[in-house]
Image (cartoon, rainbow, N blue to C red):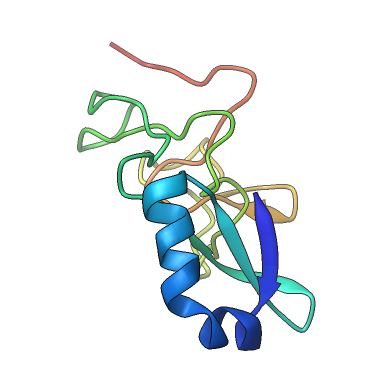
Length: 110
């Protein structure tokens, strides 16, 4: 995994895409020292299978090493899509997706 600024990613965008697509590299793009985006191959989303993880719809849980972990924004929602008892954020971090990753009991709920 490598990290670069927005300006570097913009100046070398074709190369960055090539590295992600063909080399399987994950590139974190930062603005003012904070991650704002991750460029990854669509072949490696690091998601579990579509299944019932609690809540009204089936979801895909993030794997332990998914770059979507701790890369989201809670949007002011206190709970994930499962509802009360399932906080949208863990501490000061929020995952991208419908379900917040739970290291104690990551599911599935079937």
